[in-house]
Image 1: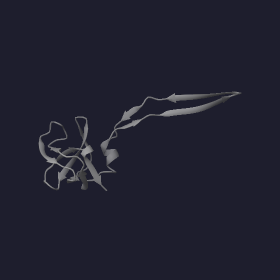
Image 2: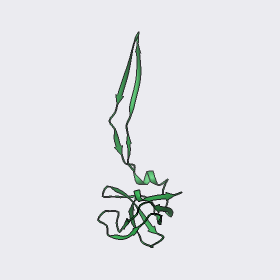
Image 3: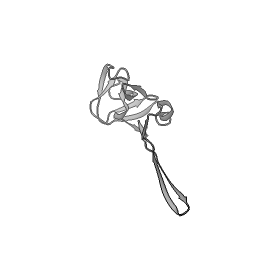
Image 4: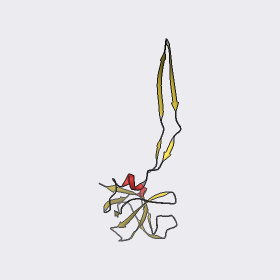
Length: 115
């Protein structure tokens, strides 16, 4: 998950009978939270997730170059491991598929965690 923040500071200054307004806009800044700090409260080992897209590749490593071990489809349930892994510009869950029994890595965007 990547968060973008834009800060806008508005201040009104009064001097004698003159009233002026000061607006200061800071540049937008994109930050990526640390997976262990941010997601440890959200994802716990053993949580169940549901696949939200057809043809999701289960990979051997959290990387686009990881060997494809199998495919998942909308509605497939998976067990999600602890934390999030980062590779090739994506965040990945380590999962185990209840349907196929295959364990590996999938991009987090394709898994909805069931709370």
